[in-house]
Image (tube, rainbow, N blue to C red):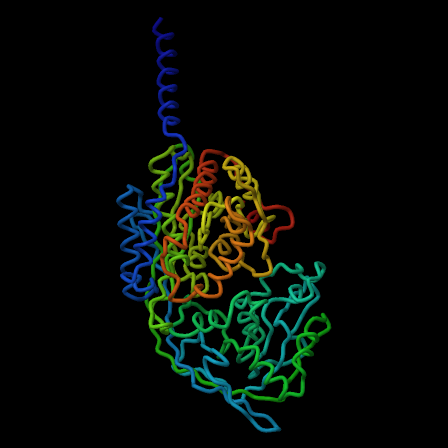
Length: 541
């Protein structure tokens, strides 16, 4: 009799526990929470949230306080912070880049024709009569039989290279990945490869279409103080960009018609072409070493707390910079107060809703705008073992003007995270759309990329194409307007008339439910066969 009572009592307790766990069903991510944080973080009071400034001090304190209010645990031992040692180089370039050659010389004007900086921690970095050599796309890719640097000693020379990769120009799916940008097309790769080749300098020729942003973005992003991780990476003396019109002037002085240099770079047999010109330019630096901070908090799972789902968003923007129409504060409402606000709102939903079985980590990273530095540091010094990290969900740049039908995945076809997104999207009457603009390389331009590089399946998705009320044409118009007029400009400010919180909330809701599903399972999503990130995951297992 006593044994029967015990058995009945066990099932009664288990049933009550299960009822208690399911009483809190999937909750709604609160639009009011997103709006409140977004308006606050993108206000002038946070000075554009630039690392190493008062804006950082205010921002990380705000995030820590909000995580504490929600009752989240410190995510790095007893601390809500992960220190990220950075070096700030505040460079002042010379006003002119002096071009000399047998037929005479001419000058290019800083900011109008070129922008340069250096990552070297030296008081003065310079090119002095450095021979200019056209290096095509600046790519070394053995798997494609491609080497734009082959056959030349690059010591002392400056590589002049095209942005993006040959596949973008040809639209040939058999060349690289066709219209889809590869990592070889990214500006970060161009700088890295020139340094590996031993060049003294590298100048990327800007064109709006293959770069996917205008010259104004290049100006804003490459002037003023620049941050980098402390380390021993190979670096060129001078790196930067030249405007397309200035590049044409260079090639004309070298006797090369501007159409020809683009065409000659499309052949895998291309080899470096000396231009017969030399460049001189100097950057004088103020150097500051300090520590920035990632902010990290956690909710422990009640089943497998040693397995983790990471939600990530970068908290930083560009701070105070060159005034545009009298405004010098780069508030970064869309980029990325929106994602940071969703991070806080999703954390609130997890606290108010069903207890996750796995632990859920909320990571607000620093210095994304300076080259994904906060997430790169986390990837090199992970708080949670990559082999125990189920997935990463990144949030960056929510700008939808209303609830969207599509849920566009940047990097679609990489991992089984696509399947999770598809299942949840269908429940909300939405459909999955592969990135319609893979040529712009968005997969390499936000923090999920650094998680992918260490093998963690990463999802980066939002509604971008079609809303429930207006056609794709209207949405494209709004997106183009943002990219042209507001991206990385002081005008990226919170305007509830332009940024529909209901649209942002709808995306945040899907991302919350995807993470919640992952947190209640035992399965680890896998990279698809053929993904360049699969080997890193399998190496961790």
